Length: 106
Image 1 (cartoon, rainbow, N blue to C red):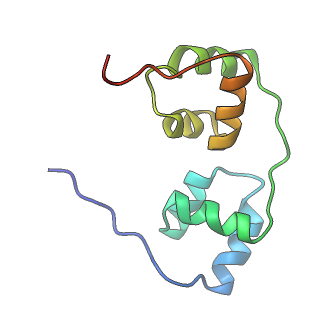
Image 2 (cartoon, one colour):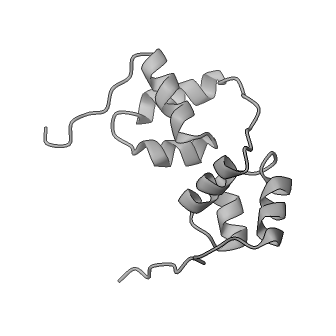
């Protein structure tokens, strides 16, 4: 039986916000979440509230090939974490190159 991780909930301490500001440009939301014992969604909300933006990184040929290979059958969230990109970035690139998800009921 899998154990569910209990994340810290509630208001963010000033120290946590400062750490997010410091780490955000350098490491993924998943890594930040692990360091703070917060969920990835919580980190994404906080970075948005703080107005933090990552500089746009060009897609490498390897990243595009990975996206093409996995998009139809892998969750967008998993792909985003694997490629260290936001959900929005993965969805935009998939749309740009004409990729679609396979329907689960087929």
